[in-house]
Image 1 (cartoon, rainbow, N blue to C red):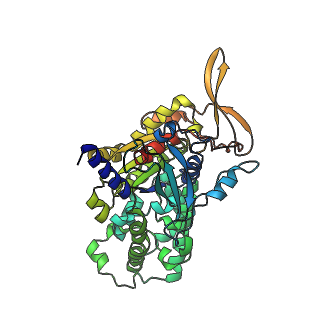
Image 2 (cartoon, rainbow, N blue to C red):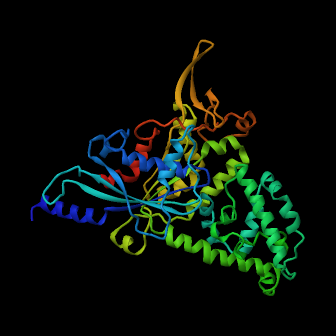
Length: 463
């Protein structure tokens, strides 16, 4: 058989097998997952028309014909609320879409012309893209699978800094009075669990990320269920593991440990097994700028949360056998979001800070030969870059509208390219300002480097 024909046949077989792609959009709370998904769908729907996707090769060369939403495969999962999100942006004044409150899914059919026409190759090809969205709060539970109740309790105390510890002071005062070997009082455990959940919610509002259990922050249909009525137990360092294991089932320690195990086996593990083991590609969204403004303790908290989260996913090359038996993520993007909240010359510095923040996970991924790319982007651009003349000097600035409707022309500050030093925090060298979306205009949503993200995540599948 001629070499070209053999290549065409093999290519056709490969395309037949690879015309479906599953993309997970992950990140911690407030990283911008809903905005990213809304923009991604909007850009692909406008491909070939108003969308500006010059960094996506298939679009730049005129081969990308567009995309349509179609019925998803899993009818038991809510559909991602794209229409509602788009409607929020079209209001007067515009507002950001509601954040994720549960699992959602959306399926797109992307139509494109192959880069090389040949015998047996169709004129147009369709790629099915399945998009998955998850609450950032729930993602934080994946590292729980590496713990038992004793080790989890100890880590919660060891890693809590002074600010977060202060927010949990009411809970800790009550929990410290509990003796591990005392008989459990169901009502009392429920009461102290709510104090713990309240402290976690307060910490989230203050900008902390590494908060567990995630369902305490967003319980969904588990609200008020006994499975959410547990908490770390103070004072366990004075007890040996053998002595704790010998406590009766009616004891406080045994009751809390039993609920922790149930939470692992019936909430966290099924969530991981049913959703996170079937991805092909993944993007992790990180709100670096928000953590930078919040201060050193919250910045370190974000670093710990991301490092643990990255360890929970299964990365590896996808051969035929791995596709059939051990699905793995074979390409990864890590993106610093809200790049429109800094001036353009700061974007390179933002990527440098992201890479410094995730230095160890990135080293491990590259050592394992996993294609990974760090970038900065703005899923939905909310500002415009300007130049201002001040005291004879030209200075970069951002023009936008605050969440309160106030027109702003500001320079937020310089982004450090490495983990900030104590001097940076003392100077408080960066001021993150939340901007309102720009007024709605015809065509695709304005963005920064969404086309670069699409090229990395989908580009090879559109050849």
